[in-house]
Amino acid sequence: MNSASASSSVRQSRRRLAGELAFVIAFWVAANLIAFRIIDLYERNADCTQYGLPFEVAMKFEDRKAPLVDLKYGDRKFARYELLAPLKQEFGRRYPLILYLHGLGERGDDNVRQLRSLPALLASDAYRERYPCYLVAPQCSMAAGWWFVRNRQPGATFPDELDAVCEILNHVIKTCAVDVDRIYVIGFSMGGYGAWELACRCPDRFAAVIPVAGGGSIDRAELLRETTIWAIHGAADDVVSPAGSRDMIAAIRAAGGTPHYSELAGVGHGVWEPVFRDSHELLDWLFQQKRRSVLGDTSAS
Image 1 (tube, rainbow, N blue to C red):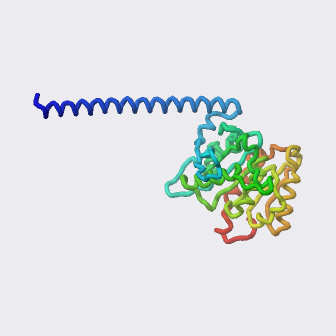
Image 2: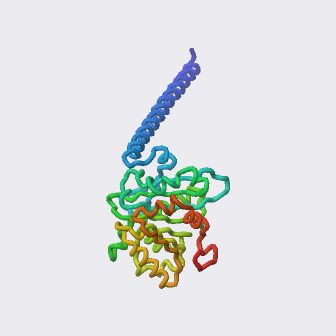
Image 3: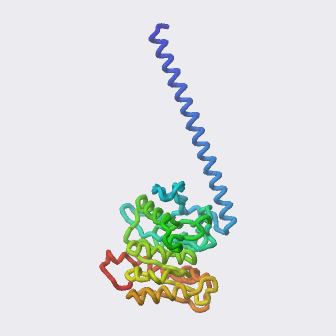
């Protein structure tokens, strides 16, 4: 064998060895990805069982991460959230988005338990057929304790969970076909407080806000004079007093706004069920709303 043939044989052997090695590495990576996926599914199923959420409901949602690149978040590099996409998406069409802020009992780091109330209902095929939209469900961590703390501590400038929620919204808008003129906020209990607060921080961003069984800062009610709002509270709520909603509605009206308010007689803290599960009135109204800056309308819808 001459030197040229020997050199060609060596190159072929090296290429064959490199190909075999690449195959082994690819197989190893794929096997690990499958193993990690199986572990994730097992843990998600265990969480669903623990929190009373059907596994098939949770699997309709996508576990996502929004990057937190601002230095103000310190070592926290991302914010996790759950995303439910429209059941059927048409090319070129943009869809409304509902941001859901959960209550105190759904706090945690599992990114599952916040789905067990309103998100689980809206994930049913019947609701997805009737209301094609994106549903975004972040989870407030136990460490944070509350959707917002900055405005509860005078002079504080540090970021809180609502700042991370805004980053999540930005991430969804960049990566999904969202109609930015039809972004809605629904918050329940602690999330009702969060919905009032988020509306105060970004009064021009949302087409409509539905705070359920919450309360807000009446000294900032003037900020919501032009915001489309429908607040809900149970008259028999012994967890969060309906005075919180009544006072906010009164303050907004005193400032010249015309928000909607429904107080359900004989209904306690679980007021979200009769207004969302037993009736379509509120959601039918919600999906008719657009940002007033787009409509050029300063009157209540």
